[in-house]
Image 1 (cartoon, rainbow, N blue to C red):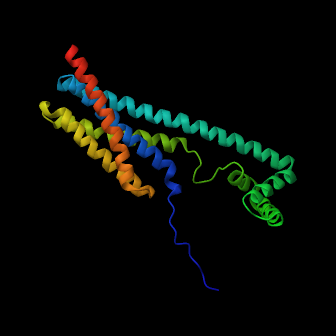
Image 2 (tube, rainbow, N blue to C red):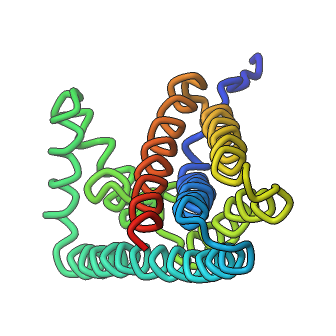
Image 3 (cartoon, one colour):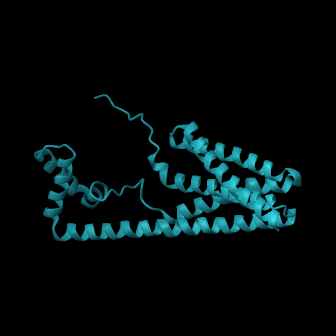
Length: 232
């Protein structure tokens, strides 16, 4: 009998860390660049600008890491509680749970007889796994990983924030706003394109999306900085 292979390559297994990494890097660039552009537009000195940038980097990285950890931990707690409840129901009423599984497969298009057979066989091998996947929607690829999400967000936020921060460090004072904004915008476009490429999504759409929000954020903070700098 000829052996077959499964040539398709799916990217869903990357969604957990990819989401946290893209969010962290994007926020690092946008928030730090916006902060620096706003401070620079207010005609602050370079020392004040760098202090604001470094403080924004540290605060943002810790906030992103902590926020991701708390958020994903809450998701993980909910998943574990649902699994514990399902495990207890399988122990106390296995026949009811098997029938529930069969009804799920019937709703997906299987005949009642085939659905009952599939539910019986899956229940005999890994009943909890079958209910987790088909009743609760919990899979290995999508399971919550709080520490992974926190580390990915904190590290990538720092990496993203370094781009506008280093730009501000080496750019002459008269060109700070334009240079920080331009370099950061290029970084955002590259990040959006890379994330789309890794995730198998349309590159142009992703790049345009992050560029739009980046320009909006930096434009608003530059306006605020200019306004308050003029008032002062």
